[in-house]
Length: 208
Image (cartoon, rainbow, N blue to C red; front, side):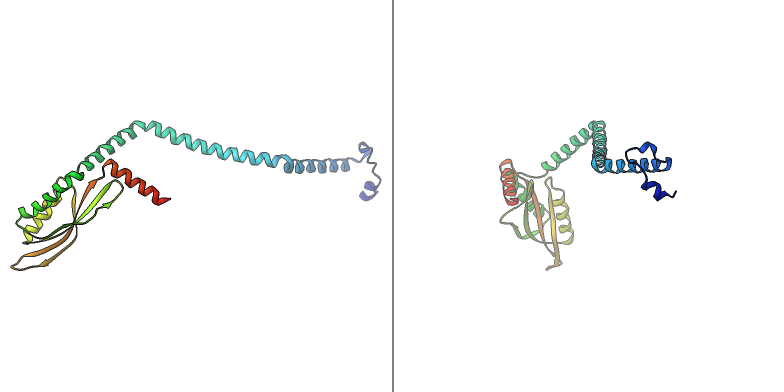
């Protein structure tokens, strides 16, 4: 009897009487159906939940390691913060406040006169440029003098206790072996609390 004949004559109500090969094939087929159905009905969702949990676990481990490293380095970070605050304090002391700005302008003028330079122009800008926590005031400067005196003036300005920089420098020949220096002296001052609050308010409103 061939296999097709055996399958045709099978009694579905008495699987125990089936030939061993057919019972084995039926069991394997049933097992495959159960596995496939279980995967799509339940195991797939559980696998996705497991994968998500594993990813979350990795993220939590990374966060833990970062926090642990920060905790270990907390004293070092506190010392670094203290050093930064000290450096910032020193830098702020080099910026005049509003009331000291006029005195600084006098110091710049005096530095030029002290070197025997002749001022043809010393004109602070009509308004300051407001930055994040300081204001910048450009001053148009034109002086006449010898090469040595102009160089000494630039050195004196750089050594003032307050921060002053010379930008856009242009030196041209003048009369009687003198030189003409055209430059923009930029000085800075820190904003007081009211100015800082107003600046932050305008900045915030501008972002809206």
